[in-house]
Amino acid sequence: MRKKFPYTMLYVEDERKIRQAYMRLLKNYFQHVWTAENGEEALELYHQNGPEIIIADILMPKIDGLQLIEHIRKNDFDTRVILLTAHSEKEKLLKAAELHISKYLIKPVKKKELLQAIELAGKQLEKIKGEILGFSNGCIFRVRSKRLLCQNHEVELTKNESIFLSILASDPEYYFSIEEISTLFYIRYDKDLSSNAVKALIKRLRKKIPGNFIENRFGYGYRLLLSAVLTPF
Image (cartoon, rainbow, N blue to C red; front, top):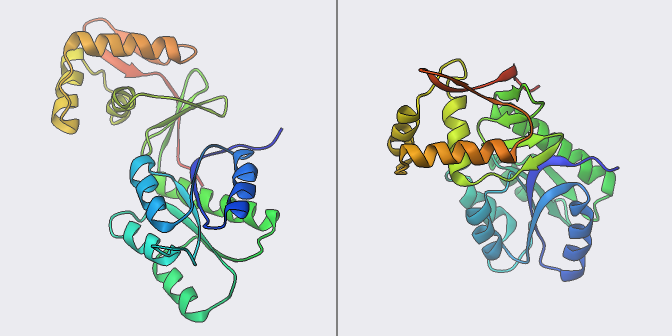
């Protein structure tokens, strides 16, 4: 069984056959992969999906790879980037360094080289993400990216579910009352959820996620049942 990387991926390549070949490869290692045929389309997918790792060719129509990453770096220094090029050009290498590129690979890229570059990008991501909360049911919650993984498989969360877990994760030892959770939804995220809606959300989460991971203490409220707080790498 192939190792699945716990990250989301955007792969950008203007040549159709190469793009399709890479897509088949990457789907073996990632649960979520998006592809784009030019920098403009890639930028749209980036804003829609927020991929954690981007693999992009430098020479592309409409917006080239460096322009794409330059735009992303205006507000985002966390997304990891692996740039591919057919030539080793000093000026482009210097520009790539300025844009905090994880790796610069010369095409044609060998499978081993690509996977090593992805491993490197993953280690960088873990340092950026900070704490990982381990639940008593064996699942983990990545605080910064609001992603939940159980048995190395990502659990699909709705936006409200991820916000709820983020609220509880912000102070794991504290019991949050239903009223406090409802208020924090509004103050922090500008979302108006009634107390009944919060209760229904908790009920859905408990059905979706195996085992007990939310403690409810009468008269106090709700908190996460943690087994560990991990600092990656």
